[in-house]
Amino acid sequence: MSQAPLLEVRDLHTYLFPRRGVIRAVDGVSFTLHRGETLGLVGESGCGKTMTALSLLRLVPQPVARIVKGEIWLEGEDLLQKSEREMRRIRGRKIAMILQDPQTSLNPVLTVGTQLIEALALQGREASSRLVARAVELLQRVRVADAARRLRHYPHQLSGGMKQRVVGAIAMAGNPQVLIADEPTTALDVTIQLQYLNLLKELQAQTAMALLFITHDFGVVAHTCDRVAVMYAGRIVESGPVRAVFNRPAHPYTQALIAAVPSLDEPVERLDTIEGQPPAPEAFPAGCRFHPRCPYAEPRCHQDYPPTLPVADGHTAACWRLAAP
Ligand SMILES: Nc1ncnc2c1ncn2[C@@H]1O[C@H](COP(=O)(O)OP(=O)(O)OP(=O)(O)O)[C@@H](O)[C@H]1O
Ligand SMILES: [Mg+2]
Image 1 (cartoon, protein in one colour):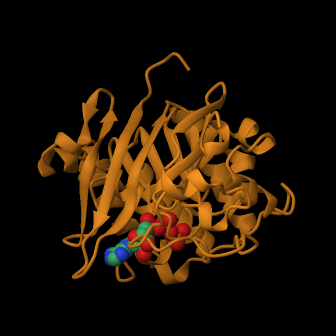
Image 2 (tube, helix red, strand yellow):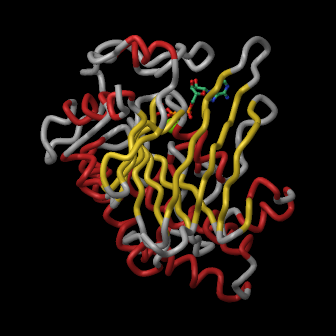
């Protein structure tokens, strides 16, 4: 793509420092996101997806986590150089995130209306006399029926899918340029999940916002994303246009992920068909981090981390099999 990316993450490292040891949750992640594009970030539980997303907002858990290295360029500005005060203006207006668990991202003791109006007021773009009408509009945008009445409801009066829509409406309050949706893994079934994602895609079509969609499920990615970045043990091991990666996965981990999808119409909820466990981020193996599970591992895979190499146009993978022997 010739146009400059809206968001460019370079060599991001976010570590956690518990009392003992270091957890290298995000360990050298780079990717780009263009206007109007949907990028899927896919990988097994614990590989660092949420920590990557929280890093973009500079909302990593305090004090245990720290962004130790990297650059996050949004429209020509490095977010890692911003003050906390500047970041408060960026969150919601430029980058917004729909948290993984819709149950915990709504306040149970406040009505839907109060929470929406709070989000709108925080953006400071709307006259206070317009807030209620705007809140109704936001709910209508995410297809909540009978929106005016819903404003008076508390979260427990809504279904899981509806709660998620409300969380989506709150995220849309600031008209963000980048929306991060961190998929809940258990809260909703896959059909509702796909409906919700399609709704986000409709909103995207109206606003040209970029969508970063985080999931375990390669099937969902194949249905809805333009490009995909596959994450394993704190790093991106393969990325490219969805079709290219799906049709010709180059990294053995991606191949295993895709093999775990029974068919495109039947997304999986868990990736437990891959042999073995991902390594613990406090003790990554030397060399390629996938080598203990890789059927093709050679001696050099045990020693050095593979470089990111081209597979095809816009499609890269970090695997020694792509390098000259
Ligand atoms: N507050 C924390 N304290 C200690 N370790 C943490 C904390 N939050 C995350 N981690 C660790 O950091 C690593 C990356 O976590 P992260 O939440 O980014 O994974 P994920 O890819 O989003 O997984 P999932 O698909 O289960 O949501 C994991 O090993 C996790 O155990
Ligand atoms: Mg997560």
